[in-house]
Length: 223
Image (cartoon, rainbow, N blue to C red; front, side, top):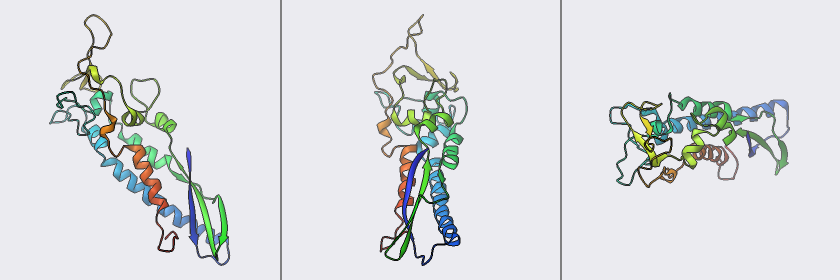
């Protein structure tokens, strides 16, 4: 897990006690849980998630709504579900990374006094690409995560074919040179992660961190 420090949660505390420590922790925990719920909601409504949710045989032909799989003609059929080759819907894996991968450490890393205020600093653990690989592995590949692959890039689009019923996922095949196992290139363009202008899971995680780090009042104090 990566360590993120939720800094300077300020509380008007004249005397620090176990009761005040617990009250501050519960307030911080509430904010972290609210931010996790927001991240989960954003994840489920993300274009990548919706495209995978559509699966291989949706009524409109497994459309690539993220525009990551456009061929030279801009009309390549198929979607991320068929291109990656999922056997089943993997989206719950992302939810597990959010629910179990983000955690608040109860004991503050530091508590200090400043200007008659008590400033608490807490540690929030967040998932890393290593966690992605363990919880959301790339299907039929050795190592890596489909989350990282979608964000960074996936090879093989040049020889990818979409069929209504085909391949492991029910919609994707790899074209090969006749009589060999060598992929046959059908198009010059490759998978384009840059089409995801706002990123995917890592971008949502950055939004989570920002959301629990920026709620301060006019005096610079966390509300």
